[in-house]
Length: 225
Length: 213
Image (cartoon, rainbow over all chains, first blue to last red; front, side, top):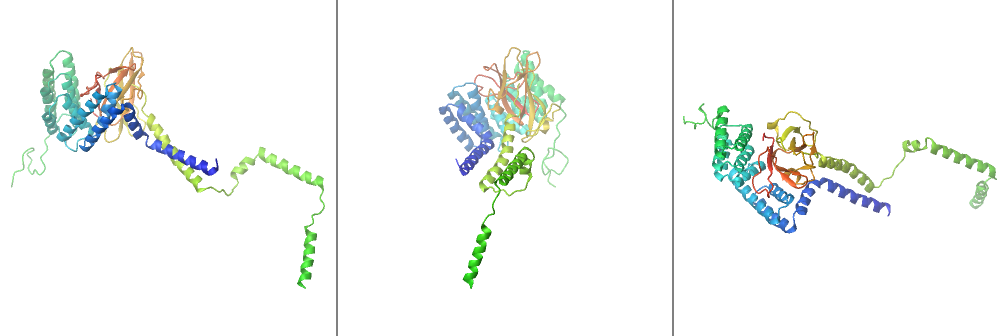
């Protein structure tokens, strides 16, 4: 091999090395995708991803769900069904929470819907809490999955949100209700009593005047001159 | 006139070109001395002189390009390798996930206080996972952060009470995870919220990194 051929071969190898290194995370994800699902399942999941992308639904949670199913040894039909259901719930969550919701909030809302919360439950929580919905939505889903009836779970979480409770309060509510249920307290009673007790410890919510308000009466519509 | 002059010049040149008689022994002595000097250079300062002496170097543009590309590629590859291996260690079953310290990108993160509300953007936070499994031979942490890969994040046994531990940097937000004990038994984190939805028959847990859950 002459010198020029050696240099060209070295350049090609170098380019391949750079490309491999630079694209490694993307490639790893792509390889994980195609390699860990059987071909028929992969085709169906990709079709679901295309549909989700067109609807503005985040794709990563759907890919994760497929990989979770693969890692747990689920059959392809069940993986496809789970991805389809999650895509549907993410689409509903997107409709309820709007375009500004984060991926974590969308997935948490989808989880709450999957657990048994209604669209109204999620919408009421959104209205009561304002922003940063991931933690209350995760707690709502967890309470329902532990046996608290959805109306009672939704009421407990939304009441905390209306009172301006911080994330710590939702976490504390979840742990307390879990302990009560473990001791034999019915889920609804545990959620109601614990939420009521927690509301008593929170400082009164600080109301801010609506935009355009000119008087000092927070929460009231501005009066015309 | 000119022809005569040229003839004289040619004769003179012919005389000058003739080599004088040489002494063969003298020639051999000169050659031997030169070889000895060259050998002495090779044993002593010859290499240093070769390296430090100024000289004109010819380099082909293609070779220069390859060298430049190599200089760019080496740090990139090193960075990627470092990124790929960062945070790989181990985890398990009694305490909920604990946020240890903020970790900015790939930087080092040590144990210490947690600024939960400060987590934002792509800043990574080191989270400690624990599982108490005294009879386990091996425990792995699996979740959406490692592609649900059972071999990606093994836990290490910490102490004699069967506690398995791992610390990994995670991006803020909601993550789903579980533990795999001895390669086959899937366990949720008993102290963390449950992951809703189809869990494929093996319950998982949820953590919201950057929030107290």
